[in-house]
Image (cartoon, rainbow, N blue to C red):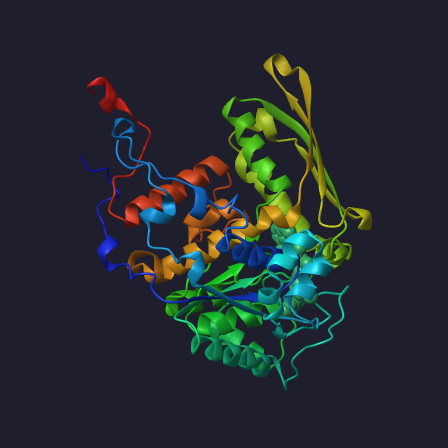
Length: 446
Ligand SMILES: NC(=O)c1ccc[n+]([C@@H]2O[C@H](COP(=O)([O-])OP(=O)(O)OC[C@H]3O[C@@H](n4cnc5c(N)ncnc54)[C@H](O)[C@@H]3O)[C@@H](O)[C@H]2O)c1
């Protein structure tokens, strides 16, 4: 029996993942070097792709009694790790071995094993403007007469990389920029392209990379909370060019836990009166976020999800007075090994209060790297899938983001388990398999 919604099998029309997939990273710091060094270590059998759904996850097909759960990477046509080629941009000199040493995420011994590979990748000069990231100063940056000229230089870099690879994706693993709000220049592609020539201050460097990628017809992924493609102009360009976009800001540590715990409280109809979240971290990301303008961008991205999950408008007795606070404190001794504390005040039957404390001693980039890998592979798949590539926003990848994106007028889905189900059902759908609704009546003769 076929499930409604599964009626558009286009498995045969998905272009195969043959040849080289070029991954271009805007920003080659902690997350990027952990991703690239990790892929190389895995290719050499030195480590396992832990945390990557695309590499280790399975997907159930058919009934529970069918015992058919292949690995996702064997079920869908995604690029193989051996076929990935990397390049990118940054404002620092040196190569990726130097960058990985600076980031201090991976052990020296592990880096030595793949040193020649890392030394062979040197960031291209970036498009950078300190107005948008106050705490960093560029050593290597492009110059140009206006933003249009700079974005065109990025397009040239992409075109050059296209000649060496078969398909490409561009991922922003650059710093968190200052908080920008949507303005007139973002409302249409025409206004945006005029703004590029006029040097409109509403257009940040991350948007120049995004525009260049989409113009070149390649998917764009945003690992940071920056406004970037969250604007009508770049949504328009994405659909026009069949170049997919998705949500923003990797859902790694504290927000990952929030998107697990908040749905648990809601599903049991337990109230929440307060949620205080604080972080200490000492990497370069922490230093950038120490600037109040960059912190504001991160804060907005981290604050949104509780309200979306808890739906106080539907459950005013449980969630209307919630006090939600998020702090990030730069504390150099911790480096990339972040500590995220949450104090959660909840209440139960007859309003009696309870507390929950979560202390997550995590490793920021160790959590982020597999998400970045999956996103590159899945966005490349989306670009090859007829029923997905023209949609613009790939809502089925919400699973990976603190701030998922969704169609106008539709609230984004933040619950991790709904996101996971949505992602797997999308994969079943494009492969022409029955969707899994968990109804399960068929096991009881229903
Ligand atoms: N590490 C995580 O767990 C995590 C989770 C969610 C989101 N993020 C976001 O991902 C991004 C990267 O994090 P990270 O830990 O790798 O930070 P990082 O500071 O180590 O690396 C960012 C790099 O981007 C470069 N950069 C800044 N502006 C640039 C530009 N215009 N063009 C090219 N390069 C530019 C910086 O020089 C730096 O090397 C940050 O925005 C961070 O907030 C990280």
